[in-house]
Length: 135
Image (tube, rainbow, N blue to C red; front, top):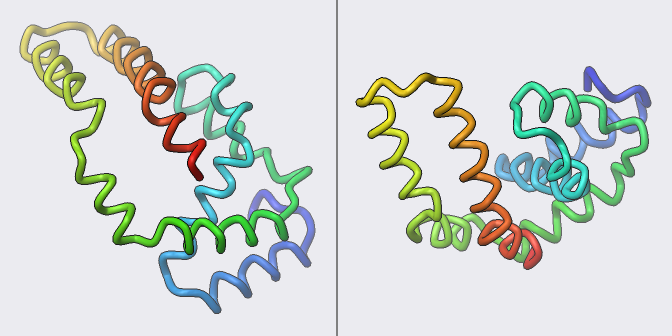
């Protein structure tokens, strides 16, 4: 609510969140990210830049559409289905091994972060984007 200017939008979102099961906030978050998908993929791979972008998205947000999309996502991807997908081997598993090795070898943290960003972007484009397109 600290980045949304329209009080009616804030009230409507809170009303929906209070009337839905607790997991609905997860689906609303996913709906927000999916609504900003192209912009987020174009943002520099940096947590601060992503936070800044997400913090300022609401100026043109259609909260009614986001709430409807969140409800649709909850029906299409119930928690049990998400848990099943998450339990499959992550495409980032080899990266975990690489990062552990780099830490043990004393590779500078900045280089580790660069590797993490590059690998994450590759994994998203290879597997994650396909998953997002099914949503």
